[in-house]
Structure formats: structure tokens, C-alpha cells
Image (spheres, helix red, strand yellow):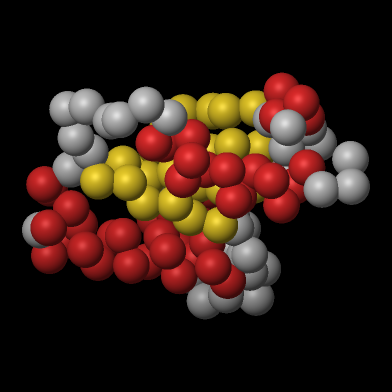
Length: 114
């Protein structure tokens, strides 16, 4: 998998960096302001800066009802834009390349045929 160096990782991006509000949506500005307030933890882009996968790190605060609603909104919005989402529960330690192994299916799809 020598092509993995062609990926770019960006932390803490506004959801509005990845998504657009439909131009015919009611209250387009309000909807834009809402997604502009939301951040995702990491986004991995391919060599052409197309989003490959969004990574969300969930700590215990994601059990709160307000966070669950936000998480559901983000997941549905990303899905409708055909952007993959990988949710990881935060821990103090991870074994070896555990996170890398969870990312591999998303990244290997984009390296086939390069």
C-alpha cells in the first residue's frame, strides 16, 4: 500500500467544509449557519482533496441526548453526500495499529487502480 502517502489528514473541520445546503432549501442561510457551527474531528482526503472518510472520536459526552441528536444529524448528512464515517470511542490507549486497521478498508478502496 505504497499509495497511502497520497492522503491528507485535516483536524477539526467545519461540517460546512464538506457539505453544501441545497440552493432551493428553505432558510438556506440558517441551515448553513447550523452546519457551519458543527465540527468533525478529522477528515482524510485523497490526493485530489476529495473527502474519503470522516473520523469522529466519541467520548462519554456523546451519550448525552443533545450530542446523540448532533451525531445522528452528522451521520445522515455525510451519508446523503456519500462521505464515509468512522466513529471511534476514545480510550486512553489503543493496541498497536488498531486505528490504522479500522481505517484500512476506507483507504484501500481509494488506492485500487492507482
